[in-house]
Image (cartoon, rainbow, N blue to C red; front, side):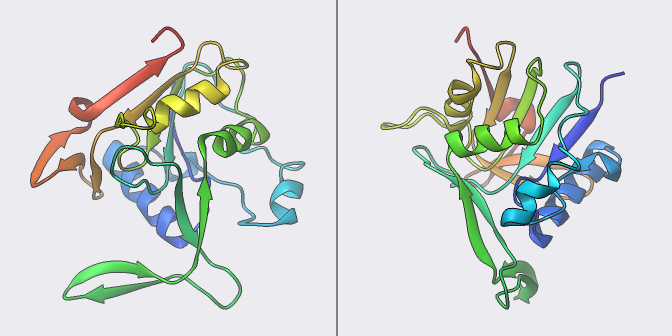
Length: 199
C-alpha cells in the first residue's frame, strides 16, 4: 500500500515543527516523518550503519523533502538553521508572529542533497519525490529550477525518478498547505511543476 513520507535532511526544531504541520494537514502519521537521528558531524554518518532512514520506502510511496528555499529563481542552495554548540534555535514572538532565531545554517546544493539521499538509502527504483522548499520550481535566468537540477544529479542511478518543485512560498498550518505568490494563495498542485528524465 502506497504511503506518504516526510524527510527532514536538516533535523532541527524548526524543521520538525514544519514537518509536523505538514503531516497534520495531509493526514500523515508522525512516525512517517523521517530524519537521521544525529543532527551533524561524524555521528550522522555512523548512524547510517544502524538506520538508513529512507531505505524502507517503496516505488509506490511519495517522499516530501522539507527545508527552506530562497523563494525566487536562480537559488543555488536550500537549507535550514540547526543547533550548534551554545548557538541554539529558539522560537520567539515578534508583534504576535512566531519566528525562529539562532542556530547555524546548514545548506545543500543539488549535488549534496542527491548524495545525502543515496547515503540515507533511497531505493534506486524510487519515483515520486517532492522538494518542499520555497521557490524550488522556479526557472531562472541563470539556473534551471532547483528540483530539476536535483533530478539531473540523481538521474543516472534513479532512472524512474520524478522530482516536483513549487513556484512560490509555502504557507502551512496543521489544516492547510498552500503556495503564496505575492498576496494570493494557491492550491499546491496549481504551483507544482514536475520534472522527469524525459523533459
